[in-house]
Amino acid sequence: ILCQASEIPRGEKAGTTEAKATNTKWWPGHKQKHPTRNGKCNLIGWWENELGSKMHVSTVDSQGNFSGEYHTAVSSAQKPIKPSPLIGSQHLDEDGQCTFGFTINWKFSAVFVGQCFAGDSEDEVLQTSWLLREKVDSLHSDWKATRTGRNVFTRTG
Image (cartoon, rainbow, N blue to C red; front, side, top):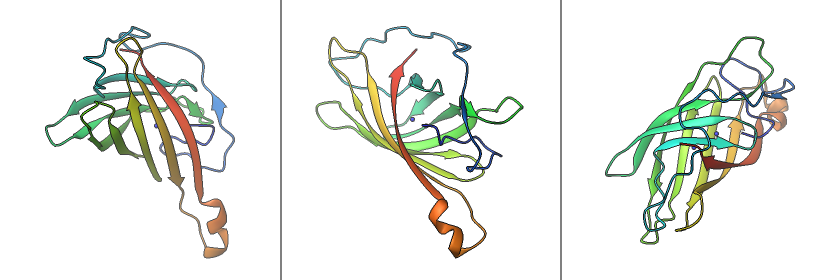
């Protein structure tokens, strides 16, 4: 529900220099306004962050567990990056502004936490923070193994 300049796709090293992807829109419903129901947030659908990465939440069950896929736009890889599975859970309060967390199945560990904000006349927005942990060879290299950042996702369809 995934990243800043440190967003690294499966198979890439977190130490590489990332580049912002082009603004190519290749998924259905791009930039369509999605009406909220009484100001309550619904995670299902397509979301895009300020760097052009996209995620699709396909299901949310009655317990608040959800799944989908993440399409990164930030990479230094020469080949196109394949979508990566994501799984998470949400907590929906009476006001409909849910908090959530999810992980992305990359070669390293990446977790997101956030809150969905929705108003009757506003677009839904996901404010997220993330941690990315890369495996390092020794305890002496541990200082460079974890990155942190923030992203804002808006609904696109």
